[in-house]
Length: 124
Image (cartoon, rainbow, N blue to C red; front, side, top):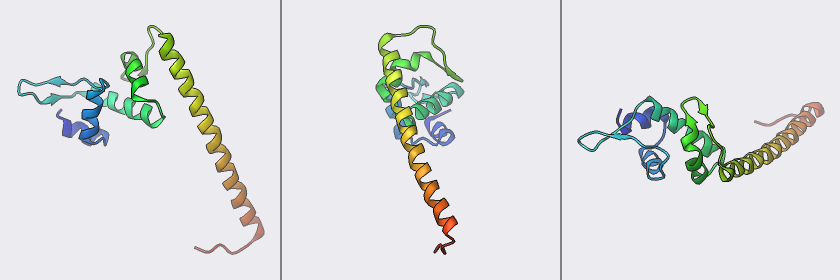
């Protein structure tokens, strides 16, 4: 498939797909006319990269683990100490964010409970 189709399927702007290629996160085949040629594996790769980016993993770290990425998740045939440490650090940051978000959600739940319990009218 061409870049426009990959963009549509993954809801990823073509400019971002080109950036992933520049960073070595996506390596499409090239047709004789120079056009990029993507397949289903590339579609899965884009979804993995986006998920890791949304989780706060940097493109540098993603580039380190990209050789271990399989279409359905991570395969780790070997472990690089630097990559392992970076992922542990990233996991710890995510756990901190999750704890903060949970605390904020609980505070909102407490407020909503107090408002409901007080039988105060709630304006739209």
